[in-house]
Length: 326
Image (cartoon, rainbow, N blue to C red):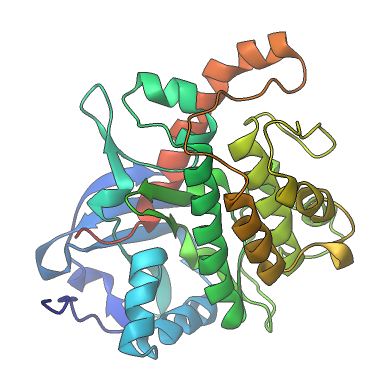
């Protein structure tokens, strides 16, 4: 096996030396550009406002200090920031690893997009665009792989502050995920002065009501509960809705209920891992239609709009934090 070549990059680099091309995506807080030359396996995310330098430097430093095996894991599973981009003394952007083709999909209109969890949630619409559907068992395997990635971060004292469907890519051969937007990783041991950007429908209510300043480990468990229910039951599922026994693995029912209860009782990542292992024995290799949740007429009206909005926003927000091309 030939060792992977990876472009050398200093932890800080002047913007004039980046060598970036045309804009690929424009969001409210940043614009994303391709990077030219030897660093084409990276993307340049340029912030609309200068970033808190010390916080980004810490993430970059964590990557540069990793052993080769850990660094390879990060590049395979996480859109890790590898260099802060500077204009004088200000940090104006970040270089991140670019998504591999295995996490992309070519739609029926010959447009290439990242394959994020919105394609799993709104799978009937996605299928019409030419996206393969996953079986229930494959969905559980994807969730299990996500727990492994989040556990890897947790072991390093890190939490993802905007864990949401559009920030998780997936593939089926083998079933595996890649987490995007990793410049929003935060050390649980440190406070942050950086503005918090989250996706409301995927955010722990404790954060929205200011009971806690920023997402924490309990917030991660809350999102895992949403992902399990919305992926296996319906994209319109919300805490308090029914989890149909004939559709939802029994091993996960209490996990979801706990995940949306008091923070101190929410399942840990090891508990999620064990429950998903149990759920693998309770799911099949067949494609199952989404269950009806809530008002059927409202669901039908919302389906088309929700999918298109989710896909468009997901692409716009996610494209700049992708993994490498193979």
